[in-house]
Length: 254
Image 1 (tube, one colour):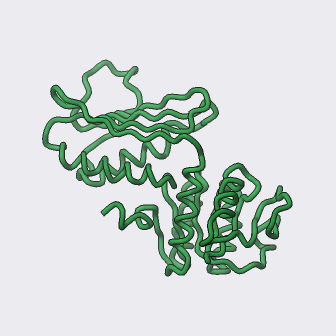
Image 2 (cartoon, rainbow, N blue to C red):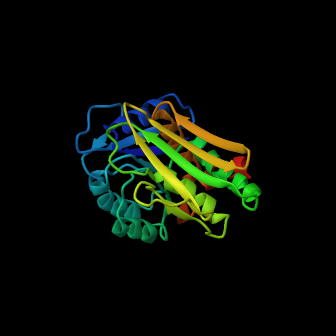
């Protein structure tokens, strides 16, 4: 039985994770951390420093400003953490790296199992097609409230392709300012914002007389919670180090 502390337990994703865990016989939420905590079936603490409950792992879906105190708590208590909060600046990312030398930390650009499979598929496609004149374009779509563009997942897809391609590609985000043909060493990355789209990512390999498309569509945010819970089970008991969803899904992806 994996004992989990849920950081951000009263947020939207916190509610989803708690609901999933409640139906999972292999894990349980033993405590929550949230300054706006609501009454639940487990004790809730307003700050990490107030939490005195032992656990096998922490799942975090909170805000960037809550991360410094959480990392101090993780470092002190040596509890592995699945860090799902996005938008961390360089200083915080450096802190994450430092903490991972003392305790297990898992962080990925996207917690979805399907998206991480997508990373592996586009790498295989890039390797197979890299010498056959295929152009690569990435289109991501999200709801109209999303602030950043392109999405972190779109950039992670491009990085995954570049990783197996000797970093040959440059990223181009806007073709409207320069009137010239695309080059062979670029990946076009485009953002669409509208409605309540949870998240869609399309990777197109366009060659002469043929097009290959690899797509992923998120129908709800529950997919990120599913990945986070799976990651927490994996991380429990692991030695200090930096982990990603690629480690969690290693047996599937290889």
